[in-house]
Every structure is written in structure tokens, then in C-alpha cells.
Length: 170
Length: 439
Ligand code: FES
Ligand SMILES: [Fe+2]
Image (cartoon, rainbow over all chains, first blue to last red; front, side):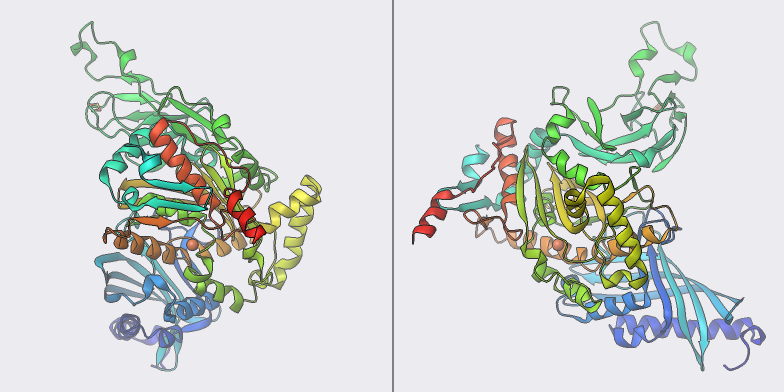
């Protein structure tokens, strides 16, 4: 893993990214949010655009979620509380992540990976709802694994009318 | 059936106020309110900034009716039913856009954006009895705006919008006067839903009593970020009956406001800028009004289903009933036009908005949970009544419920008589108050 990203084969890169994404999904499905939040670097962001502006950004559009790293931590603290009523008791979630595509990009701070993947997240609580969409990640190398610098989930659903709200981490 | 005598207990002598829970569960009640309230009240459709340029349009569904809200090529705001006058197909099939002509995809009739039927392909096939002018687009009987907020009314004989809004205009002005150059709706909408009767959302949107419990995690978040410095803010102010069913709850700002109350959530860098906003507000509106605009929360109901919450940010929230036990929400962020895209001011506003509001916020999902759990509870069939009597005989306090009672009084009165109940401008239960004072 210490090899420069650009020197590693596409298959090798994709495998390691998939392992990382599956690990992250398992943490989220197990509600191990304290471990999950450790996957982010200090100035990371997590965002979900509004369903009617799936390509919108936080500088000029109303998002569903636009979290700085400290907001991600606050979100985790909230979800760990018994008083986050929409998620108490926790819903059950099951994440399917596929179609992983990895691209190596050079940034001022060094190399990083831009990752696209499809997701279907099943949330069960009183009823079953599915959140379907596409992830975009920016991952940086950290030891023999990765850390998240940027994480965005664009939903395909045109509204959240079937879901009610978005109380889980996508 | 009389709603006023059978479904509401409004005993002002003794300070008892109860609402019968069948109002939240009965499909017959749902039909009655659709016909007697939604067919006669002014209903919010959209803000003029959403259709800024000639030809701009957005689709909306209001009281179940599919609408096109547009600005025609001459600049006039219009609302049409989104149905082809030929045989009914959906005329406009995109949620928003800009066009001079709407062409129906079914048989290609086309209409200009003033609603005039332009082309009927194969015109020679129509007889002399067919008159094109009979097939122009139709729309709600009345369309009117106040401060850029556009409403429709399906009743030709309804009072004028500004008379309908009445005393609520004072509160709308407190929101809209915050901008120097008008307000705009920020791109992007929160479109979500609740498995409860729509009236529970009306109640919840101006219910101060639930904040410490339902929003305990939000209040913790505010504290963690160094905010909530006015510890007692949520116990200041109170609710008001504004007449015609409109109501407001006002209190001192309990946490940060982009206009204009700095707390550490915004960061030290923002402090000087927020003070500059306040100074500018004072210059434009005078000390007293400016401080009220900047430093208070306002939760405003425009009867029956428009909420404007001017809190951590400003949201326009439209409630669309779908069935007795289900409603849809559309919510937008309102921002002064001078807070341009990419500016630090807009960024602060949107960040602040998202902490509390919306389906992914730290607070709104818990409101939805509360409402759905009430609806679930109503299935028990008893108790039959819900209590909304807080503060009937005490001085105003935002944790009281006069603003919610205002809604219910207007609601039953409209159902029974087609008119609004008399406005309450003093203590509702002076007898009890007098008794308590004497004891
Ligand atoms: S239904 Fe529109 S042209 Fe026929
Ligand atoms: Fe609430």
C-alpha cells in the first residue's frame, strides 16, 4: 500500500477502494458511528444535495446535508443519543455498494483518488424504504488504507415523499 | 354536524380547550376541509423570484390541483392548471424551465404563456362550432401576491389577498424588510412527507412547548458549539392571534441568526460582518424595529397551510394534505438578494438553515417522528380529545398555545360557516385568571 497510487494497477486500486467502502458500509450498518467518524480527515466534508438539484453545491443551493467535519461529529453525537427520536430505536439499514470506479488525481497536497460508486440503502423501521443514488468520494492514502476528504451522496429519488426524512447517514 | 360544538371544546371561562382526534383521522373530515377551507382560502403557490425572467415557469400541486406558476413574456405572473384543454394531458412535463410556448405532447395543441391556444394541428378537421377561444388555458379564479409571495384562490368571491392577510402583513414585513433589495428563494427545495394529518404539522410549526424535549439533541448541539447564550430566550415573548386564522409565535433568538445575531457557531471571523448587517438594519429601520427583526425568532402561520419560520434562517414551508393521515411538505430557504451565490453571508445562512431545518437537519426529523407517533396513537380511539389549553389564563409565553388555538378556532369556524372566528386580542380565560389572583 505504500506504493505511489499512480504506480498501482487499476485492479489493485479498485480492490483496495472496494474493501474500504465495504468496511465503511459495515460500520454504518452496525451503527458504529464513533469508528465511522474516524475515517474522515480533519477538514473533510459530507454532503447530500436536494433531490430537485442533484448536482447542486453548498455555495449556491439549499442542500439536504452539508456537513463540515465538526458537523459530522455533531451528527454522530446526535445519532448516538437516545433523544434523536427519529432514530431511536435505530432503524436497520443494509447498504449495497456496486459499480465502483476509481480515478487517480493529483492535487496540491499530493495524489488522491476520486471514487464513484452506486448505492442502494435499505432502511427498515415500521416500513421499508430504499435510498438509491451515486457516491462521489475523495480519498487520501493513510498508512495502508484510506481516509475520506470528501463524501457526497446524490439521490436518484425526485423527492423524499416515500421516505419522509433523511435521518440516517447515506 | 357542527364542528364547533361537536369537535372542539373552547371553554374560555374555565380555560379548557380540546380538539377531537377524529379531526385528524376521518376521511369525511378531510373531504369537508378540502371543500370548505382549501377551496376558499388563499393558498401559497410560489415566490416571484422562482420565475424571475419572462417565460420562467415552475410546476406546483396546490390542494391537489396540478398548476403551472409562470411569468409570461410580458412579465406578468400567472397560474394555469397544468392540463391540456383538449383532452387533459399534462401540458408541462418538466418541473421548471423557460418557454414561450407550451406544446402538449398528446396531439400537439400549443399555447402561449398567456394561456392562449395557438395551434391545433389539422385545424381543417374542426367544424364551425369549434371556437379556439373556448380552449385557452384555465387557471384558479384568483391569483395575487404580497411581497413577492404568490397565492391562488379557487373562489372568485374571496376577499382580496391583502385583506385576507390582514395583521399578518406586519410579520411578513418584518421578514421581508430584512433585505435591502428584496428576497429570493434559494435554488433547491426540501421535498418530504409525514405520515400524519396535516394539521399536526400546522400545530408543530408554531409549538414552543415541544422544543426542550423533541429538540433536546439540537439544544445540546447549540451548547456544544458555544451558542445558546441567552439561556432564557425560549421563555420570552409569546403567541398571538392575528385574525383570519393567521397566528404567530415570537421569542428572543435562542441561537444564531444570519440576520443578525452572532453566536460562536458562525465563527469569530463572521462577528464583524454580522454587526455590520445589524448596523445597516438600524440605519434603514431604526433601532427598535431593527433589533426586533434581527434578534427575535418568528414562527408565522398564514392560514391554512403556509408556515414562515424566521429562526436559524428563514424557511417557507408549504403543507399539502394528501389524505387524513398523510401530508407532503415543500420547504425553501429565503435569502436577501444581496446575499449572492458564493458569498460568505449566504453560506452562513444556508449552514445555519441546515443545522435545524429540513429532512436531514438535526431537528426536523424528530418533529416528523413526533407527528407520526401521534397519528399512530390516534388509532387507539381513546382518549378522544387532545388538550391545547396552555396559557389560556396566564400572560403570554411562547410555550403557551394561543397561536395553535387560533388555528383551530378558524378551522372549525370555516368548516361550519365559511367565515373566520373573531380575533382574540386579550386573555382568553379572564375568569380563571381573576380567580387565581384572588386565591
Ligand atoms: S390532450 Fe393535449 S393535444 Fe390532445
Ligand atoms: Fe420542532
